Amino acid sequence: MRYLYQQLLAFWFVIFVTLITSGVAFTQLTKQSIETNNYRQLFGYADAVSKISEELSTTSDLNDWDLIISRSLRISETMLNQQGVNFIFVNNQGEVTYPKNNTVPIKFQLPSESWESLQAGERQQLTSEKNIYGEKEPTAYAFVPFNLNSRFFGALIVTQPAQNIQ
Image (tube, rainbow, N blue to C red):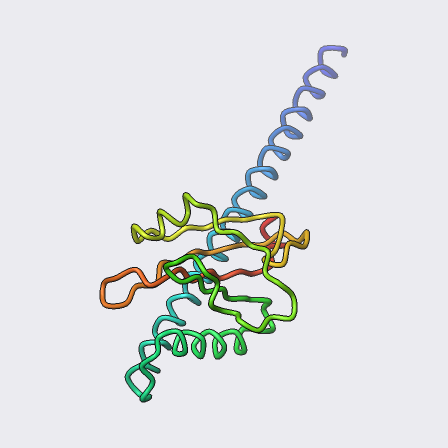
């Protein structure tokens, strides 16, 4: 009888370990899938801003690319306001040119290794514990190089709160 209880206990232990392992694997897979989709979405927003900039440059009589990019970012940010998406544009000298007139100062520093990768044409992604204003809020960052006439013009940074990633 004692042997039967040992076998029964071992059987329940195996079931318990299997359920725990499956649960952890499912949780990790879901988290990774959400993170991948979130960054894909942020990169898509950056591509949309680039297309809006190109469209504005061809349909309007504007020649100042800073103004064109600023208008494109303002239009895109207005449309994505409900999702908490923010845009930052850093020109090729490393100066933040968008947003210009912000009531809260931006305290985000682009890591130097990311800047070098952006100049080489590579996209970057980062999840940080702080948002662009220096407040403690998990935030997803997508860094996209912005090229004009095959020349590096600056970096577009797209941010969104990352509560679903953490």
